Amino acid sequence: MGIDPELFLSPIDDELKCPICYRVLEEPLQGFHCDHVFCKECINAWLTNTTRCPMDRMFLSRDLLRPAPKLVKHLLNRLEVRCPNVSLGCFLTVTLETLDGHIAECWYDPRSKNHARIAECRTRNPLAIMRDMAAFSDDIDKIKADIENLRQHYVEEKKHSELISNSLSKYTLYLKDCREKVRTICEPLMKMIATSVSEDESDEEDQEHKTIDVAIHNLHEFTNEGVITEYLRQNDIYVQSCRKEPSISARSLNFVATIKQSQRNRILNSELWPRGVLLNVVGEKASGIQGARNKELPAVVIQAGLNCWANLSFNTN
Image (cartoon, rainbow, N blue to C red; front, side):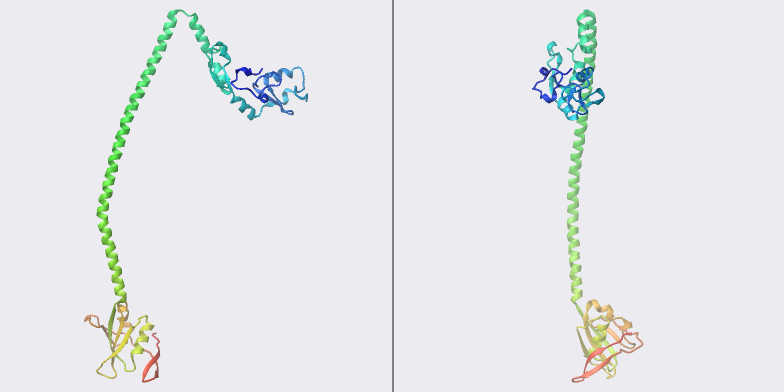
C-alpha cells in the first residue's frame, strides 16, 4: 500500500505513483521485462492471483521483480511529507527518506516508545510523576555542570591563546629589531666589499694596461730587434716595442723590450735565455736574472733593404 498523496506538500508526478493503488510509491519494485514500477505490497498482492503485468499484460512473476532504479528512489527520498500523525497533533514536515526514523520517535505515534511514556504519565500517580521530574531535574543539573565546565575550559583556553598571541607579538618585534641590527652591521660591510672588489678590478685593469721595459744584455752579434720580437712572440710574450742599446763590444749586443706588466714573470724565465745573457727590469734593482739555456737563440734571417732583418723563424726546442 502506497503513501497518501495528501501528506505531501506539493503535487506528485504520476511517474512516482503506483498504478495499482494510485498512491505514492512505497518500497518500489520494477518488472524485469516491462520496466513498470509498483509498490512492493501492491504487486505482491496482485501476483497472488495472476502472472500478468497489470499495465501491459506481459508475463510477470515475483522472481522477475527487481528494485526500482536509483533515480526513482532518489526522487522519492527528496519529497517533503507531513507526519502521518498530523491528525493526532504532530505538524512536523520531513523528507520521505527520514520519515520512518521520525515515526519511530514521534511522540504522537501510538507505536512510539515516547508515546507510551506520555500514556504512562497520564495514568501514574502524582508521586511517581514527581520522582520522574526529580530525576529529570538531576539530569538538568548535570547538564548545567557540564556546560559550566566547558565554559571554564573555554576561558582558560582563551587566556592561553592570548598569552601565545602576546608572545608571538614580542618575538615579531624582536625579530624586526634583529633584522634592523643586522642591516646596520651588514650595509657598511657590503659597501666595503663592493669598494674592495671595485678597487681590485681597477688594479687588474691597470696591471693589464701597464707596461715595463726589460733590458736584455750580452746577445750575440747576429741578433737584432726583429729576432728578439719574433722569439718572444713564439713564447707567448708580445713585445710592444724593441730598441737596441749601446754596448761595449760589437759581439755583445744590448736591447730594451717593452712588454705588458702581466708578462713580467714569463720574460724573466732563466730557461728562456742562453747562458751569459742578463735580464733586468729597468728601474728595478733586484729584478736581474741570468740565462740558463745551453744553446744560442736559433734564427733564420733574410736580409732585405738597408741591412734590415725580416721574416724571422725560430725553433725553441
